[in-house]
Length: 307
Image (cartoon, helix red, strand yellow):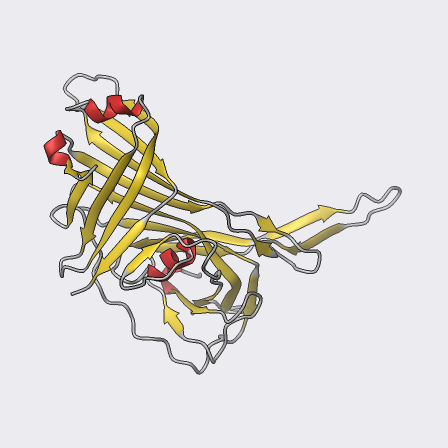
């Protein structure tokens, strides 16, 4: 029986939309904890009167979510694809529409299949969203990369052969605890504002829409619209100054730094984040109360530092 533990994923940047990567491209092995792209089948009955037209089946768009830890440099390709920018002098910001879209070929290999094709390629893969979560206490930083591709193409041989993979990423996962620093709202440390953050969620999404074509089995093209950045702070209910300011529509600058044990880090900065939602949990006996502070922005700046 096929096991997910025997799955490998590789990727290569395509030279153009609609052109699968091959032996001439640079291929990377992908670290992941689960998930990925999947094939779909669509069907439509032919409603023939007085007869049976049968069912018409076809390949549907490929989509899925890649689950990962936040390893330094491992997901940079995903952030650059989503933000349509490049880490220039180690700084990445939203660049639409100035940057050219990136399309990837991803290939899954399942070594323990006993029948059928063990390779499955996905062409014109793009990133439509990334979700990061910092949980306490001392938990690894988790990531979800939402993917979209035209369709899945099975094969008995890999597309890159005999091209070797680039050197593997070996950085350890980033964690919460002492490795999260510089958490500030409006350039003031949260501790100074009597805020203790229990959980932080960063959701980055690019508005997109499938563009079906009559001559393509699957997705066809895909549009790229506005970027929406949502940050959710789950804090202990100790000081309601910031919570009360949600109702006044007060925009905030929010920033923090996440690092690994070696000191490699990412610094996140969001400007003019406006309130989107808020909640204080109802009281329960002998139970801590929490606030949820939710802000939305159209910008994100990521600065990376390696040691």
